[in-house]
Image (cartoon, rainbow, N blue to C red):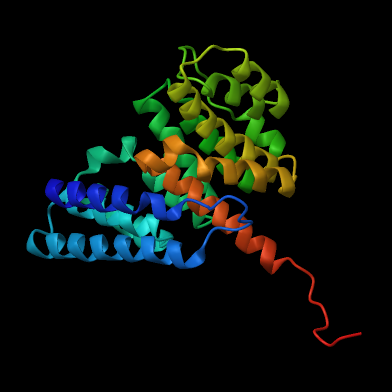
Length: 262
């Protein structure tokens, strides 16, 4: 299974340049995204074969769950992630990926619980706290989500302390970016910090401020981010999926017009 994941990484990096949006393009090329998804499907099939050979191999279910989530098959990802816990119950407390699958399936209470128990595993990671806020916001509203924010005492990697203050209502999106700009990060690290900032400020703009235009702009920046595209991290995949979901909802919400000439 490790070889399978390494094979996937090589394939993924070979195709990363294909998903870049050309200058001047208003939308990503859907045919290129389809090609990327084809590669994920190939790896999903390989993971399924590994599972067939050894159904008790947790890494097999983990790898296939990831491929399914990257394909937007959140139900399939949930099934595989839950199977991991069935095989090894000790994994439940650290399984934040299952929480993300629950979130996109709109199982918000399950998602909130998953991120809450992860806090017992890692009481530093504010990114996890943001996902719990997002889940509670969806199920209970803004006030309850803010009242239920997890408590953190130790410092965290940038820009998460700033982002957490924003979700708590103590900083504005503009203040977050201004404070990032004030820090003299090395250029490569700045790109990484801005990936996370654009992703979560974009989600905040969409959910809390209901500013779809700002959300689309920032989520596109997260999708196009050089750090995200060059590493293909799990959260870049989430950013990609969230961005395309937003674009899809934008199309669905567009008013229907009469196609006849007037």
